[in-house]
Length: 188
Image (cartoon, rainbow, N blue to C red; front, side, top):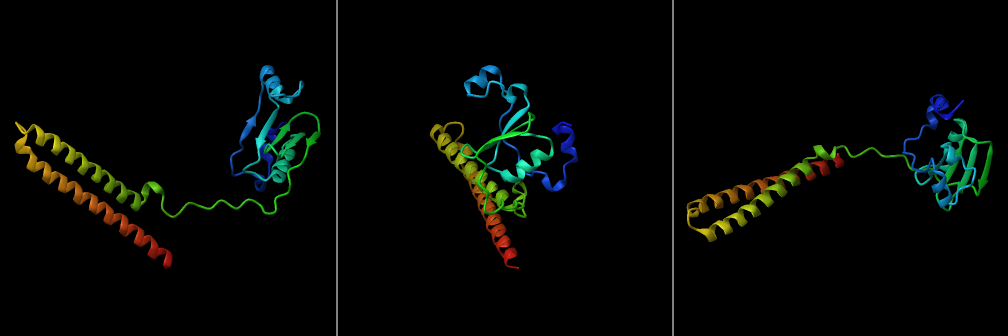
């Protein structure tokens, strides 16, 4: 029974949360020769995978791979990957050293989703308003130099700049309030 069918029967405790990083799978004969692969490599049949172990416990990964039907195992701890294939039962290479501690459990993100963050919204409003005020300043400078038909608009641009500055200060106030509120909630 192949891995795709048996994988559905796998116990929940062996399910991997982190993505599998496939370093090599099917190889053309030319590519297999170029990387120094075995002449009868299971990669040539699309029946082998080299999986990075940077984000997995090699012992747990090997157990799960054996359970779903992989029989060929190559261990490459110095290169950081494990070869698994559907060929005959065999293994080679030096096993990965046993890790003193398991991987730390993934922590859930902070209570605020970044897109909903009041700090980000306040900071964003302050940033946009600051850029708007600077843009008005540049426009006012350019228009003041032309002075002819646009001279009556200059006082209105000065008022618009102050409106942008007020919005920027409001955004800064929202940011400070949100951070203080978050800080107080941690203390409760």
